[in-house]
Length: 489
Ligand SMILES: Nc1ncnc2c1ncn2[C@@H]1O[C@H](COP(=O)(O)OP(=O)(O)OP(=O)(O)O)[C@@H](O)[C@H]1O
Ligand SMILES: [Mg+2]
Image (cartoon, rainbow, N blue to C red; front, side):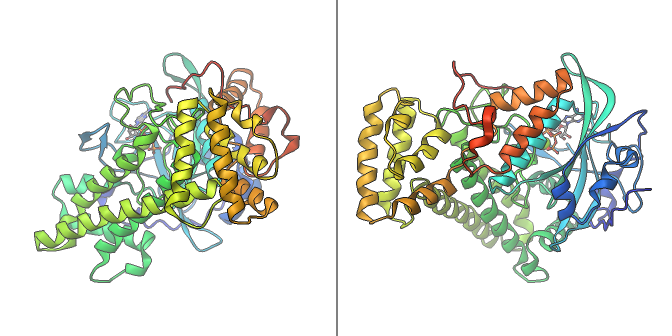
């Protein structure tokens, strides 16, 4: 029995310079470790077939499934601000696209399946630990309601990967609305290939801005669409305390999905300067810098699109700067509304925003935990006492003073306690993939071949807004002590 995936590969039909065909590289003993059955169903795929040995060969890049045309995509990118004119999928392989049950086109891509023409000095491989990490965190993000690439399967290659030490190798099957990055546009723009740039932009419009197909102002609408989606995405990250960690332009997808879970993490204590990548010494991708970096990346996309926007330079510039302002406005609106929702206020006044920002300030000064503090407000709104939260602040009185103002504000609305509690719970997760937990379940899987903790944690993270009194040892532990940051991929 083979695996039947109804591929329809629009990206492979783009001109030659967009990608490179990669022949299969057969492995001796690949094994399926994990299949995401719910996602398989969403894609209209047979989950049982994905668990077969044939699937292990296909999903490790060792055999081509019927209809698949494995290609590595070329792209460029600014890495930590430095432009690299040619990066491309050095360890990823697009098997093809499928149209899912809801009618949306989705890429099915392997990550870690071996060298491609874009591998440069790299081995094209991925280790099991980072693959488990990407699977767990991307699925948690999806459950938290954040646009993201998804994880369909993990295959253990049965071969070793050498980093500082010898590690077991694995391949992740990733599903995405597309893998078109800001860096993909940069690749053609930097080479002055305006015709290819137009082909790429039209392809991106078909996939991500279908209402603009064939319209005279379609490139402006594409750029504005990316601006809106990035603003919404980064606002969601900020409201959940998510630090992407490596927001290079090649890690920004024009679909508006979170992509590349390398050195990412969630905040424990609230501090905008928090950085999780060991190589990010200047704090370029610190938590608090993310909205500005999103705009910087968008400016790089706008520069690429200038020749398509208008033949009149001043007009093209005006459209580009318009999109950057649109990003700022949309981000501010979404972020502020989200902050107010986190404290149970939905009216939209500046005073309410200021009240939420005042809490953030006190959390930073008091070294308080981001997720636990906000979630704790649901208990307080329901009539619980403040000590459970204020004990997380260096100066408990600072929180108590804020809580009094806040309670008075809720009372002014005549808000029903039950309704406030529910609204706050919906805006603030009880469970996030905290580093210490993520590391713990990865270590059990990689060192002891014990995947039970990984599975259990994945289950808990699939319902992050529910209380789950039965979560047991997976109950959110709050910040680790002593506080440490996790570094590396
Ligand atoms: N082990 C490797 N072998 C070859 N190329 C690699 C390897 N690791 C990373 N690269 C390449 O280096 C560049 C930057 O890597 P980065 O960590 O941003 O991406 P990634 O995690 O490999 O993939 P993606 O962005 O698709 O999630 C990319 O072009 C990537 O393909
Ligand atoms: Mg990347």
